[in-house]
Image 1 (tube, one colour):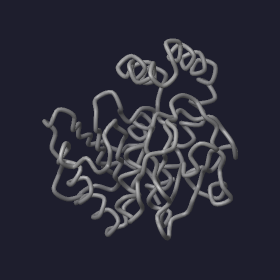
Image 2 (tube, rainbow, N blue to C red):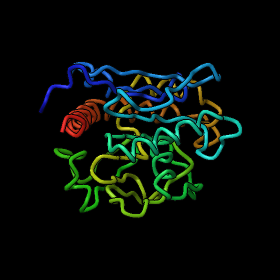
Image 3 (spheres, one colour):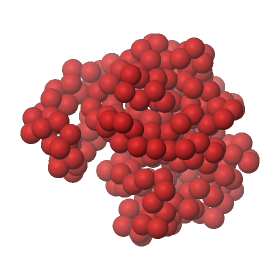
Length: 242
């Protein structure tokens, strides 16, 4: 793998509690600089172009891709993603970020029949088992989910992962653009924070003991999850450094 020393990635962080997670240390250790723009509260700002960046990461958030009236900066995100598609730099979208990538590739983003909150197994498709992003990962593994919307697979993209309650879990486009509906980047502390901050949503979803059950699962899965997250981070770095 080539060194990422001197390379810079633009990270669009929609809300403070949904950060880059386990990806951050891996990229920094490889010499990458992360220019993280926090957009929550309307105080953040985005660069007008991707000039000078070698990668783009778009993180998750509770907003919908079409809520541009409430979150005007999402129009700027669309413009940056369009630039990234034109220039061919590596792009990674996580949850909302994946939906934004799919939208800009012409796919629809719709309400999933059910919410997914907590730990769910995903299955790699045949294309997924051959994808550089999932190299070294098992064909089936548990991931953390927190979403109510879903993306459709864009035309010309590869469908990489699926699950019973939400078939479209991951896609790639031209082996440079990757969208994951699930969260493989989240450390345990971030999950705990989400359960606190989004307390009303989790109670509505699964009842008063749902958060406790999710944290129990998180602790049981923690070590294996971290290994898979680090592998994903190394795979993403290899894609960025190609």
